[in-house]
Length: 334
Image 1: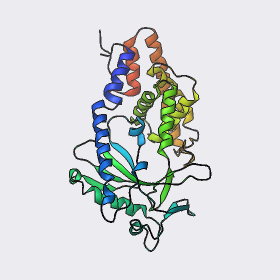
Image 2: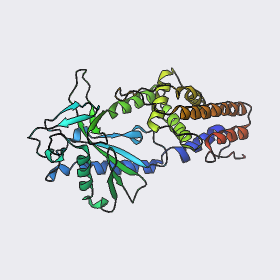
Image 3: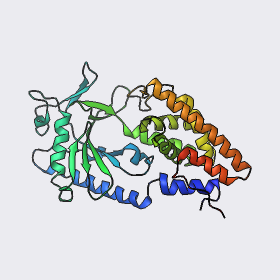
Image 4: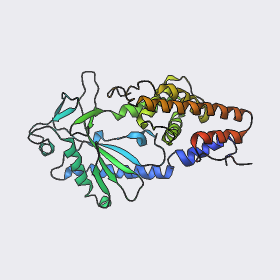
């Protein structure tokens, strides 16, 4: 019962924004079972040698910043490069070359070369996923960077990206190499995203993830251009990392974040992994619209806070409904 702003937010987070705990547990079990099945692929003739030690969960579900409804789960499946080496070509794409001894990788190379074709690797995964009896009726296809397993029995899909791990570079860093969507490879490192989110959330006593999720919900509403989820998450994590402390109440956190977003959306947002450079590719027009909406809603949070201070919880809750829409709980008379 939403008799106060605090109870309204608790109800909103539990029933609308956050993933259902039972569904989350089921999804994790399903994900872990799928990885076990994939890691047996190398026992079949003609398949690459697996490198299960580098398998990793990534994306917002792994970082615990996913909101309802759970629609996709991202997995990276490690492969052994079998003595291969890589270099960056003139277009900035990474080419992965393997020796003659890499007999299971040579058939997956670009024609008449020894450079691994990431599309062929994904297609190989697709053909093997279809042999898992539980997934015979599932739709399995290739997107730009992964094999997508669309399940009939669950609401979520699995995006399965094959990957290789580099040896340490001159600065000691290692990278994951994943498909770039054009047949070659690109660098990433989900370990840094995972550790960054965990560090900042711990710094603020576990209050950051809820704030990220509720702002993602705000971002998804069709009242302005939608910011890419990862871009928004990076802006929010950078903001919280710059703060010595954060308010205890989520409505105050929303207030502070919206004010910050109204100006931060105009700025460059550097990839925290130090790989992609500036992530903010929004058009100036979209930046203006997002900034205007964030600032307008910020002023509504100020009004809501004043109503709450005055003991007028009904007006405060109604003001929050203007921000988050009709899914935000209505005031309930005690």
